[in-house]
Length: 405
Ligand code: AMP
Ligand code: MG
Image (cartoon, rainbow, N blue to C red; front, side, top):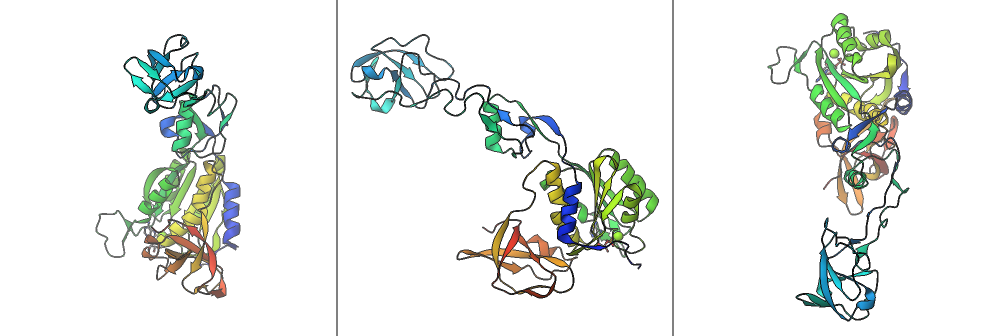
């Protein structure tokens, strides 16, 4: 082992540094079917009213309110998509169906349940007011109204609204193209029987899922050996077509740890060690042409925690999201939390509802190789370094991964 040349930086400072340095990706036009979960680049403004015409809210009869109480002949019908032609004559009614145009001349709609008659004529209740049971043009949106603001993530309702105002395509931030690579001569493919000293490459599958959840388009590069030449080749090829490189393993200070020197030779390493447990060897570099590289530690929990703390917020910034972090909620500690030493610890906890509280309990051994400490976790509790710790019963802010049922 040799000493690392990199200063041990505060985890919060390292996270801000990463966020400063990652770019927001430019926009691209996509069809609505591909726009869900993406962030809008430009304001969307209505160019025509919604609804576009006087549209009946019920099945009933369009009349003049002045004719209510009179026996009125039913002179025609206005169904959705098949309007009544011309103006409704005085002292008459037209059948209107939900979504049908209220004919010119009529000023109110009476629900079918409220009229008497049938068979070619109706009587609406005397005194029935004008202006009932139909939507007016522009009730929902008028021309010039702001429909969707730039920076808004597009969900089901937003996409429905975009379609309603006639937009078939949307300009949204590009998704980051990420090349994912595991490193290590000890790694074998899942499904293969590990030989002596070998382990299965599990980080690839964990990080692939995490990257997809964060909105990235992922290319799997497989496993790079612990040899500088082949590793460099693989990385150079990948960078040609990607915005970011994510590696796992090969960032600690052993002689086989080749990722940091490689990134140094390709660009600039800004973070090489952090006061974070697990995840001390986390490495971040900027590369030519606005590309970035994240060197995650090899231990499975360390790779996922550093993904949560550094990579996920960065990928969200790249996609234009304003909210970069997981939601934080106050939770009551159900155990004495301590992080002896000099590194902030992200402890994995389960949450349960107890009265008005969410109570956090440790998932057990917090060893960085024990993935089970993360599999059932609902949240991460940030425990500051030092011997004092946080006593059970304290309310702390936790980063919520999922809420308990
Ligand atoms: P390293 O940072 O390369 O020294 O890796 C530290 C440890 O993490 C290794 O000894 C392995 O036990 C584990 N590890 C590294 N890469 C992976 C991987 N892709 N999947 C699962 N475990 C890994
Ligand atoms: Mg290794």
